[in-house]
Image (cartoon, rainbow, N blue to C red; front, side, top):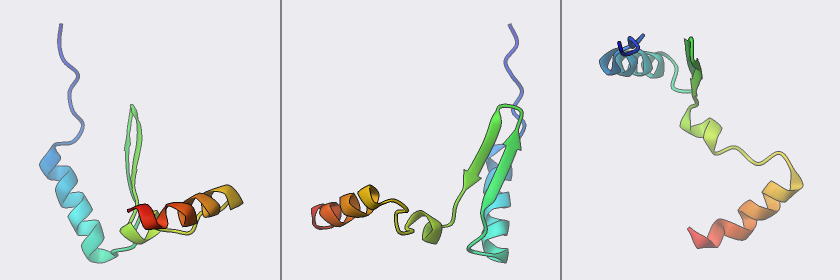
Length: 66
C-alpha cells in the first residue's frame, strides 16, 4: 500500500508563513489542499472581543484565572 504524497514540506510552509508575516504581520494565511483549508490568523485576530453576550460574560469571568 502506498502512502499519500505530501503537497507541501514543512520547510516550504515555514517559508511561506515567514514571508507573509514579513510582508504584512496582520495577514490571514490560507493553505488550500485537497483535504481542506488551513487558516492561520494573526495574533491580534485571535484576541478579538467575543461577538455574543455569553462569550463576553465568560471571558470577563475567567480573566482572573489565567
